[in-house]
Image 1 (cartoon, rainbow, N blue to C red):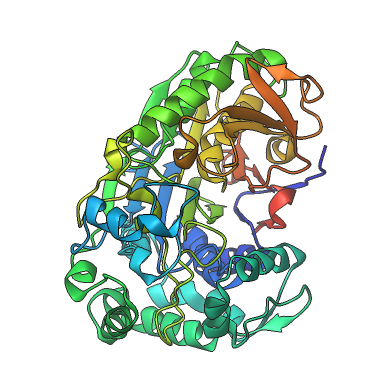
Image 2: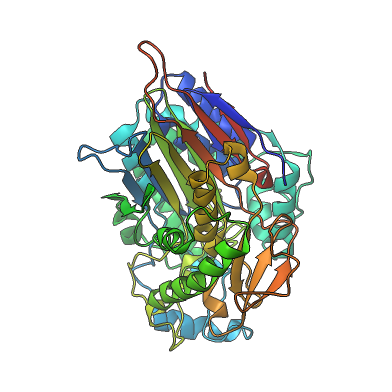
Length: 511
């Protein structure tokens, strides 16, 4: 089993990059709320995890109190900064124009290039969560991001990601972001001056600069010059959603998850099917859950596919017991579409290219301009019953997110240590040749992939699936676990935070 540590404190942050975690800690120490801290970490990830996240993508923020409440109505709240198809786009026209570019997946347009750029919702989602539960000034949330953009060291994990950018052929994105078409090596110091300028504008002028101001003008000018469908009316129409999280009551726990357009509601269905008390690494658990996973993901994809997310996650807890988790994405680990708009340093998510298709068996693909696009972005808050324990958790991983959330929550149900929930061996099922997303594999055979430590890893088959080995499933769970107790009078309750070692991130306590 991978070794992961956990940290204890009344407040803290966990994310997939240490610099992002440190930015969140600074927000907490400056008097910020959990929402401030999670957003400060997320904005820093736009720099240190730039190929995976940024202002040109999508974001969801899940906010919960230790008692499973955050809103005035006592609900766990979800702030959605969802991406949309440009108003000028239609699903069938888009697919017809692009289908001949990917012969291996008939009916699917190519995933790269400016034509596939979304109308991004990240900043509106972040702004809405901050206005509801933030305490710091908006500009304060960008301190870590601006410092990182001025220069930071590439980690081994991110060096691997940048190599994928280069091998994917997105060298123009590397040149516009970093000034070189070659992937930086681990230990290299990189700077992102164009992105720094954009983030500074957003920090001081607010999100309206991105959606309606001079920065919007620059984005649209680049789109018009380089073949993207994005226009001023697209940006001006972007609004965040604010909704209660979906609640699912099981015998021993209550689970709240992000709702439509996320896949997250699949997770409680998997948990309900699991044998009580089963180890998520066991054959009993997998045999009950794997076939249902295939069924649920296939149904979701038929309604409207969501391909894999190049996702980043940050979660935070403040001394008031409020937790906030940010899940955000560029849809792929290659700067999304691979298109960086002019000299703005903004890379765009490729949801349009992957969610639109003319496949007859996927009617949900034929989306119209302005439609909100389906997503894999998933997060969950869990409360024991009876008993005071709770957990907030999220992970990258495309269509695997809902499977890994179920495995993490099952470990929580069994009373596993916080570090073991983050680092425990994992498995997933998916179609042929598509380990990170389901839609293109619909109609193809599915396989079960297992890490070392999974009980059935050396078996030939599991529940009808051929078993295949993988040394590392990827992802990067970030979580906070609390006892739910307010502590003695004059004392603060103590929680534990952990970061999955697969992501190379860090969990730190603020106190």
